[in-house]
Length: 85
Image (cartoon, rainbow, N blue to C red; front, side):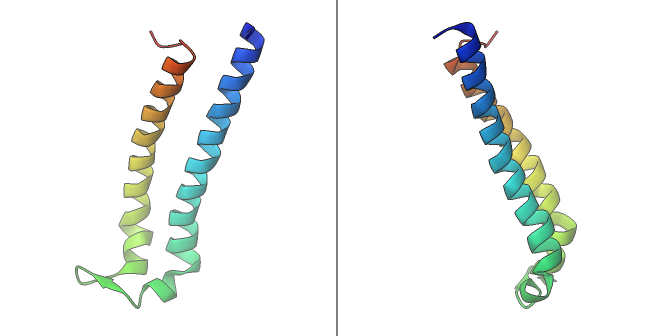
Protein backbone atom coordinates (compact mmCIF):
# COMPACT_ATOMS: atom_id res chain seq x y z
CA UNK A 1 0.00 0.00 0.00
CA UNK A 2 1.42 3.36 -1.00
CA UNK A 3 1.51 6.35 1.33
CA UNK A 4 -1.27 8.03 -0.64
CA UNK A 5 -3.52 4.97 -0.38
CA UNK A 6 -2.68 4.66 3.30
CA UNK A 7 -3.58 8.30 3.94
CA UNK A 8 -6.84 7.92 2.00
CA UNK A 9 -7.83 4.80 3.96
CA UNK A 10 -6.94 6.52 7.25
CA UNK A 11 -8.99 9.60 6.40
CA UNK A 12 -11.95 7.49 5.21
CA UNK A 13 -12.00 5.59 8.51
CA UNK A 14 -11.68 8.85 10.47
CA UNK A 15 -14.68 10.33 8.63
CA UNK A 16 -16.67 7.17 9.32
CA UNK A 17 -15.96 7.52 13.06
CA UNK A 18 -16.92 11.20 12.97
CA UNK A 19 -20.18 10.53 11.14
CA UNK A 20 -21.22 7.83 13.60
CA UNK A 21 -20.30 9.82 16.71
CA UNK A 22 -21.90 13.04 15.47
CA UNK A 23 -25.06 11.10 14.58
CA UNK A 24 -25.23 9.78 18.14
CA UNK A 25 -24.74 13.29 19.50
CA UNK A 26 -27.45 14.65 17.17
CA UNK A 27 -29.83 11.89 18.24
CA UNK A 28 -29.32 12.55 21.94
CA UNK A 29 -29.19 16.35 21.88
CA UNK A 30 -31.71 17.25 19.16
CA UNK A 31 -34.05 14.29 18.78
CA UNK A 32 -34.27 13.27 22.45
CA UNK A 33 -33.80 16.76 23.90
CA UNK A 34 -36.14 18.65 21.55
CA UNK A 35 -38.27 16.54 19.21
CA UNK A 36 -39.21 13.70 21.58
CA UNK A 37 -39.19 15.72 24.79
CA UNK A 38 -42.94 15.37 25.41
CA UNK A 39 -42.92 11.59 24.99
CA UNK A 40 -39.81 11.24 27.16
CA UNK A 41 -41.29 13.48 29.87
CA UNK A 42 -43.75 10.71 30.70
CA UNK A 43 -40.79 8.76 32.15
CA UNK A 44 -39.18 9.92 35.40
CA UNK A 45 -35.64 9.19 36.60
CA UNK A 46 -34.53 10.42 40.00
CA UNK A 47 -37.60 12.65 40.26
CA UNK A 48 -36.87 14.44 36.97
CA UNK A 49 -38.67 14.03 33.67
CA UNK A 50 -36.49 12.14 31.19
CA UNK A 51 -37.01 14.69 28.40
CA UNK A 52 -35.90 17.49 30.70
CA UNK A 53 -32.89 15.43 31.77
CA UNK A 54 -31.80 14.84 28.16
CA UNK A 55 -32.22 18.52 27.32
CA UNK A 56 -30.33 19.76 30.40
CA UNK A 57 -27.85 17.05 31.39
CA UNK A 58 -27.92 14.02 29.12
CA UNK A 59 -26.65 15.62 25.95
CA UNK A 60 -23.69 17.11 27.83
CA UNK A 61 -22.79 13.76 29.42
CA UNK A 62 -23.10 11.97 26.09
CA UNK A 63 -20.94 14.60 24.38
CA UNK A 64 -18.16 14.16 26.96
CA UNK A 65 -18.36 10.36 26.65
CA UNK A 66 -18.20 10.66 22.85
CA UNK A 67 -15.01 12.71 23.15
CA UNK A 68 -13.34 9.90 25.09
CA UNK A 69 -14.68 7.29 22.65
CA UNK A 70 -13.26 9.30 19.74
CA UNK A 71 -9.87 9.53 21.47
CA UNK A 72 -9.81 5.78 21.99
CA UNK A 73 -10.88 5.05 18.40
CA UNK A 74 -8.29 7.42 16.96
CA UNK A 75 -5.51 5.99 19.12
CA UNK A 76 -6.36 2.52 17.80
CA UNK A 77 -6.53 3.85 14.23
CA UNK A 78 -3.15 5.56 14.64
CA UNK A 79 -1.63 2.27 15.81
CA UNK A 80 -3.22 0.38 12.94
CA UNK A 81 -1.64 2.76 10.42
CA UNK A 82 1.63 3.08 12.38
CA UNK A 83 1.10 6.79 13.04
CA UNK A 84 1.39 6.66 16.83
CA UNK A 85 4.32 8.47 18.36
